[in-house]
Amino acid sequence: MKRVIFLVLIFTFTFSSIAWGLKIGGKILPDNMNAGENKLMLNGAGLRKKVVIKVYACALYLTEKEQDANSIITADESMSVKMHFIYKAVDPAKLIEAWNTGFSKSDISNLQEEIETFNSYFSKDAVKDDIYDITYIPDVGTSVYMNNELKGTIPGLEFKKAVFSIWLGEQTELPKLKKAMLGM
Image 1 (cartoon, rainbow, N blue to C red):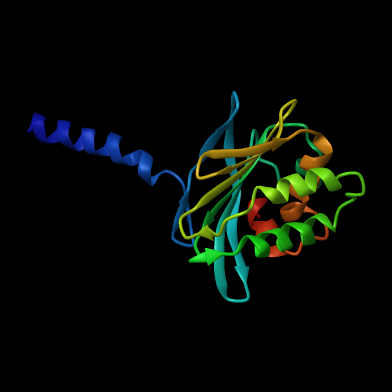
Image 2 (image 1 turned 90 degrees about the horizontal axis):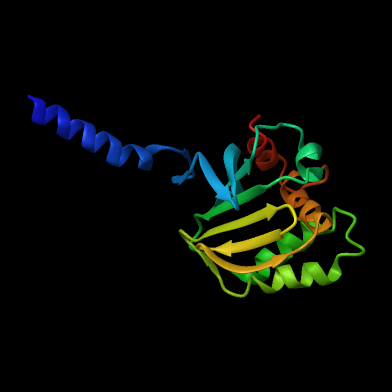
């Protein structure tokens, strides 16, 4: 009997970490993640859809839960957006077009060089099960990770505000996803 209990406990502890997270579009988004020395918690998550096609599951991670989009955008605190791709392949030109549409909704007149650098990171198709993290750390900048590989970091709070406005800005093209990422 003790052996059965021991095996059940081993199984529970081994596989329970796999179950932690939120399942969106068939993808599990973890409850938390690290950004530098900060532990971030899942604030909210939803689906990025194009018409009826599920493109990616998307989650927002913050140091503390927050539902005020403007506070999140302007905060000089660690945060991250995780995109877990669902669709078979998304052309990088389509991603760049979507980023640029989002950027155009912000005051970006002094950020053209940073936007070009950011867009240059997206040179290959995003394929099913790819995971992209866009993570901001104060005094470091906004880093782009593709499948845990750092593509580059762009310094500055102003650029971070523009990037996070893609999903959370007042004029976002993704109002349903924004609401879900805010945990509403």
